[in-house]
Length: 335
Image (tube, rainbow, N blue to C red; front, side):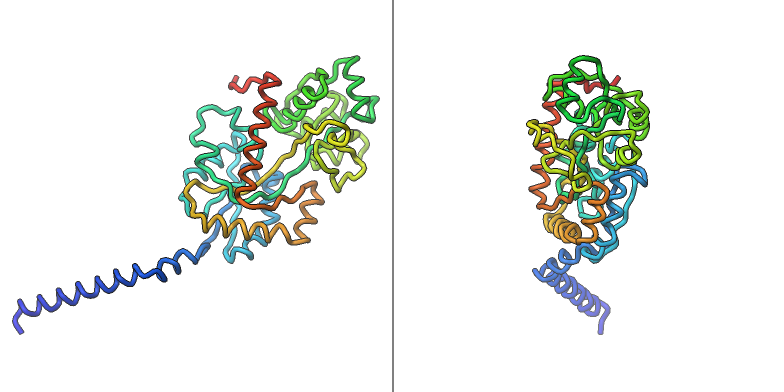
């Protein structure tokens, strides 16, 4: 066989092989099989706080059961700083494949966007909702030496003398809860911001500041010691941990609702099938009685729902806090 003839035969065979391979790859079953494998490697959840914070607690509490539902490992990574904007920017720039998720919250998509200019991402465009997780209702507690036991008595006292309230910092949920209280009741309170809840709670317990709005986990130890007195829950329903504590809604202040919430978000462009898979797995995880009990023991209320439900919740919360900031005249410009 001549060299020319052998070359022609080999070339035709190669072309036939390529054509066959290409046709096989284009078969519907091949594409469906690849897409159906999600997840086939570990899924990362990026948390906005250091290990030990409430957000970290929620993520790590759910990770093992969520991994079982997904059929793949779930890794928790902490990228703290700048009220969650560092973690949010990282996820927004990550591949939109469903393998890198953000555990978002009120700091990243409720209040935070108002206090940070020139973010390297658009909070509601570069990140999309995947699944709600849980919320921690806020309560109002006063120093035990303050001569009040009810919201009505507190309002009456605030009209006769200057009272103060502490917060975890300007722009935090406890801060804006206090501002909302001022708007709804018409009282004037002096805001005393701190760098975090821990030092703020200590000063309220010691009497340096009169009161504070915060989550039950932060306030509970001092309530149990008798240094703080709970007055009302900033929620629609009573909390199971404090069933005898009335809500502001019951007391005639339906707009006094605030919570620290968490949920999963993904980079924009993430396939709808991947989002649906994670959403279904998270809803199943949150339905496990033991996990529900563990979250509730720490003051949380489980939130289950669709990506659309979570998106609507975030938008409503964001708009509501924007109105509070406007009415309170709070400056959102950096100092």
